[in-house]
Image 1 (cartoon, helix red, strand yellow):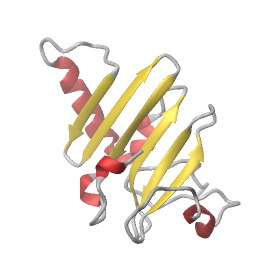
Image 2 (image 1 turned 90 degrees about the vertical axis):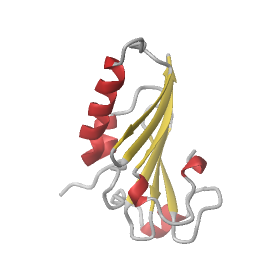
Image 3 (image 1 turned 180 degrees about the vertical axis):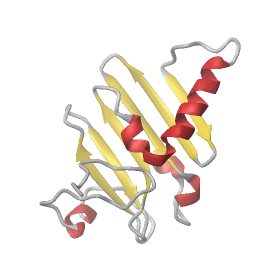
Length: 141
């Protein structure tokens, strides 16, 4: 299996072949609860994607700040189907604008907040059931 170069929500942390878990844990981060790690990776377009990893090594949240809309189908992994269904329902609501600069979508076990305009896209996504005790999703940056 080829290691992923990005986070996948709900899956184990995937490190590049030339990185160790200790190097990943040393990434700059704000105060996090014990055992929670934040790993930041370059997005390839001058931006970044951050992975928030539980003490068990599972990615429970991701955030991004990129020039181009990120591949949410890739970042969300098994949660993509729920996201797509919630997005379709949101767009089908009467009076709902088809194009928004900011959106918050909630599915069964997924919250996605995103915004974007021209060459700036940022957002965050997390699976509430995977968020470790003591971690506040509002602190995702």
